[in-house]
Structures are given as C-alpha cells and as structure tokens.
Amino acid sequence: MTDYFEIHGRDGAARIGELRLSESLTTPALADDVISDAGSLWFKDRDLPEGDESKLTVLPHRSFPSGTDEEVMESFAVDYPDVDYPSAAVVAPETADDYGADAYVLSGARGVVGHGAGFKDAIIDTREAIPADSALVLSGVATPENVATLVYAGVDLVDSDLAVVKGTQGKYLTTEGQHYLDDLHELPCSCPACQRPVDEFTREHCVEHNVNALRAELGIVRERIRSGRLRDYIEGQARHEQWLTAAFREFDQQWSYVEERTPVIRNAELAAATEDSLRRVEIQRFADRVTTRYRNRFDRPLVLMPCSAKKPYSESQSHGQYHDAIQFRAHKVSMTSPIGVVPQELELTYPAQHYDSVVTGRWSGDEKEFVAEVLQRYLERNEYPRIIAHVPEEGYRDVCERVKEALDVEFEYTVEDHPTTTESLGNLASTLTGESKYGKRDRQHNTVRAMADYQFGDGAGDALFSELNIQSRYPKLRVHDDDGKQLAAMVPQYGTLSFTLAGARRWVESDAPVKQVEIDAFAPHGSVLAPGVVDADDDIRPGDEVVIEGPKAFAIGRAEMSGPEMAESTRGIATEVRHVEEK
Ligand SMILES: [Zn+2]
Image (cartoon, rainbow, N blue to C red; front, side, top):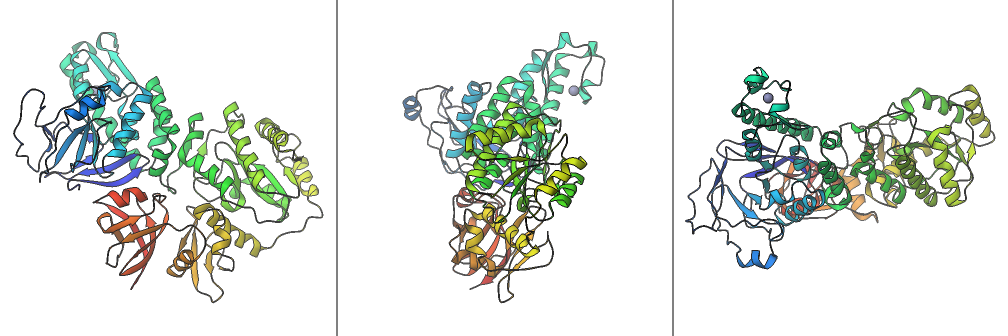
C-alpha cells in the first residue's frame, strides 16, 4: 500500500511521479534533500526511526553487493515493519518483494550500472517484484550522462553522491561524458558555478557544477516523459557511452517489460532517426498488428507505393498524383522504413501519421530486411489478384525482389526513373485499365473494420461490424447500427475507434476479444481511480479502449495504465470514463 507516491504520467517504463512528502517532489528527481537513512544493521542493531512526513526514511537495512549468494541474502533478510510515515526498503533483485514501503532502494546498484545486460536484469527483476506504484531508488550511481537511461529503464529517484565524488576528484561531468579539469580549455556550461575563468575553477566549483548538470538533465528527462518522447532522446543521448547504448538495446530485447508500459496511442511525433528506431515498441507493435490482425477487404489489385515525408500520406503531393492515376481501382499500401507497410485504411493510425524519419532515399541493410519481412508476412496473410509495385529502384525494388523469391509472387513494376514522372504515372494508370472502381461505401466500411481489427484483434472488424451504417465524412466517421443508434466514432488524431455505450455492449456480446476493468460497487464519473479497480485484464495497455463494469455501473473509457498496474496500484487514475450507465 503506497500512501506517499503517485504516478501521474507514463512513457514506457519511465514515469512522472509525485513523492507526497510535506513538500511534494516531482520525480524522476534527485532525492538528496528528502532521503533520511536510518542506517545499516550490519554494524549494530538500530531502533525503529520515528520518521516524519518531510522525509523519505530508509528503514534499517542490510544491503548486499551485487553477486552475493542468494542463500546468504535470505539468512540475513530484514523484516521491514509497517510504519505510518514515508518509507523506503532496501532490496536486491533476488529478494525484492512488496514490503509495504513507498520506495525501494536497489542495493548493489554500483555493481550493475556500467553493464548493459546486468543492469537490465537487475532493474527488471526488481521492478517486477515491487509494487508498480512504488518508487525505485538508485543511490551512488547517477551522472548527467547516464541518468536519462536510468530513468528510461524505470528508475524514479537518484542522488548526487557520485557526481559529488567525481567533482572532488576533478572530474567535470556533462551529458556527453566526463572531462578532467586539467584538460579543459574552457567551461562548456553556463550554470552559476561555471561563471568564472577556467583557471579560477576549483574542485569545489566542479562539485557544484556536476550537481547542477545532473539536476538540469533530470529536468530535460521529465519534460521528455511528459511529451512522450524520452525514447527519441535516448537514441541520441545514449550514443555517448557504449554501455548506455547496450543498455537500451537490452531493454529492446525484453519486449514484454517495455511493451506492457508503452501507450498504444500518443499525440507526440515519433522521431525515427537511428536504426534502433526499428526495434522500438511502437514500430514493432504496428508491424505485428498489421501482419497478424489486419485483413484486406478490397477485392482489387494491390498497388505498393513509396511513403511520403508528409503525413498522412494521402495529403502529400506525390500520393495525390498516385491517387489520380489509380482512381479507386486498387488497394493502396505504402512501403516505409521504419514502419514496414501501411494499408490505406490505417494511414492515420498511430504511429503511421506520427513518425518522422530521415529521408535520404537510401535504405540500410537492416531497413531493407525489416521492410521485406513485414511485406512478406503481409502478403502471406492477404491475397491479391495482382500486385503492382509503383516504387523507385533504390531500396524499394530490392525489397520486392526479396519477397518475390521467398513467396513466388509476381510484381508488376510501373516506375521509370522516378514514381512521379509523367511516364511512370501513365504506366500506373494504364496498367489498371479495365479494373473497376470500388465505391465510397466500401471504402468507409473497410476503413472502420480495418481499424477494429488493428485495435481489438484478428477478426474483430467482422465480429463487431457485420452490419453498420456510416454517417459523416472521413476522417470523422461515425458508425451506426441498422436502427440508427451510434456505436462508435473514429478519432482522426489517432486513427482509432472509440465506442459509445451501445457500441460497448455490442463489443461485450461479440466474439471480438474484450478488454475489461472490474470495479467496486460505485458509478464512476470522469475517471476510475486505481483503488476502485477490483481486477483488470492483463493485456490492457495505456491508451486502450476498455469496458468498465461493476455491480453499480457499466461504462466505456480509455485506460491510463496497463492492466497489471491497475490491479496492483493503490493510487492514481486507472481509466478515464467516456460514458457511464448506472445499474
Ligand atoms: Zn556548470
């Protein structure tokens, strides 16, 4: 039960939280001023500290260096008492558990920081054993260079111990590493400590600067979390140190830990600037859903097209030209790095209209391999009478050739030189001569069903919307049943569907997989707080559409945290509520 820590925002495993002391502290942050350590039991027995509301009291503890034998740790385990003030327990990854504390200090942190795989294992083992809504504290390890990655991994509080020690040793810390004072020709910082000539800069000034630099970096990290863009930052910042790059790649390999904590929709732009972007959850999740959930419903040839820098694609000049040549006679699918393939119905769906990549026209080996794999899986699932590849030579055609060999399918190429030359567009138009056009109704119905497949699961589009009526124009589609009752609305900014109460009822009664939050006997208005949640499905992710039901109410809304976190947490908003019906 956590009384003194609450999470207000999530960006993957990183969180914006609030340590609710007599003066509240927004996390991730430096804990120097708020931590009070009751001391180690190795040296002597200690009385239970009195504690108070202005400090996070670290209860008397025994910490172990990383690598200590598990049996030894168990035989020296500490019984943490229940206290009524803000408290922290010291745990090792092997012994971490719910001890009723508000925060947990990872012992042996110095032994794992600096090693990608060891760090990942220690953080994940600890984070998954302590309650989701408690703070994770790493002491004696933070620097301006590594703190963004520590937070990315799920750390909430750090201290300035190491930055201070390094300052006294004459090591000047920045977000890109450390410099020996004697080697510095100038002070590359404008904090108060650095407002003096370099030859008057002492080790005391260096301590002050190091702490300032750490504090400033935490400010940048907090803003990045708030805007949902910490990952973009890490991909660049962690490059300065090999183990940091190794660390976030290790987390990319740990799909379930990061995926469970990553929102399914976001307003923020996703900057795909490095090859590591291919492995981030949002990209992998889109590729996975398009190739395992989505199904093409157009009975027409496929036209593969290159993506455009402008999003959504259909608003770009090039896609306008392709559209004029195609004229509703084919199903349009864009090929893109790093997303893979984007069917026309999903061009607004996160992150298809939210990513921004470096466009050089040249794809790396990894990019080609990724796009080829996605296209292959896509074509294994979706059959077309013809496949027309209106793509440039560079990159795109290599991908098509790889897939052709793997699947034994034929691609008809229509591009001469460049996709938008008069000749290429003429080829595209004439190759479709004789193909009939699909109507607006098919286009709209297929778009709604495609979004439902993507959002709710394989087959959901047909299970939910075997009959439907569409009113209003794309992209603000409103879905009604045959009696004119509204079931759902399309949300253009995310390219997803949100249900009405009637839609939610249909969802529960359908064969489509439902995500449910079970609540206590009350009727929620506006939101459901975590203590009101009795249980929640494990596969709920932040941003998911969820049915909320209890003895007194049936409601539909959007998840603010993952299902496991809802079930575990004692503070914070679990779901927003859009519509509610009292029972
Ligand atoms: Zn400075």
